[in-house]
Amino acid sequence: MTPFDFIKSINAKEYILDKQNETDYKPHLTNISFSLDLDTVHLANEMNMAYYLPLKMQYDFYFHATRKAKRWTKWPKKLSENEDLVYVAEYYKYSMKKAQEVLPLLTKEQLKYIKKKLEAGKDA
Image (spheres, rainbow, N blue to C red):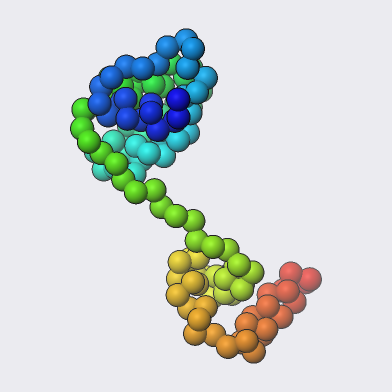
């Protein structure tokens, strides 16, 4: 079983957790999945605060508290982190997304200057 089978079962109200597959349940992935939907974000928040509960209790909470519905939100993709992108984000105090937009606008000389300034600041 995959972690997504458990998420599907919670959404469809088909109880699939038993002793054999209890260790396959990954609450972290379930929390992420349910935090992406407005309908279940509050449930994910509760489970994030109650991370210490046994796996069965966490699954049961989601199973009984979640309304049956078709919900599948696309997972956000991580931005590629190249060295220049990190330097631009740090220098201008931009988010990685904003830095990715700005990076093509900078020349090689400007990137060298940014790197030099940041590296000089780290030595101090």
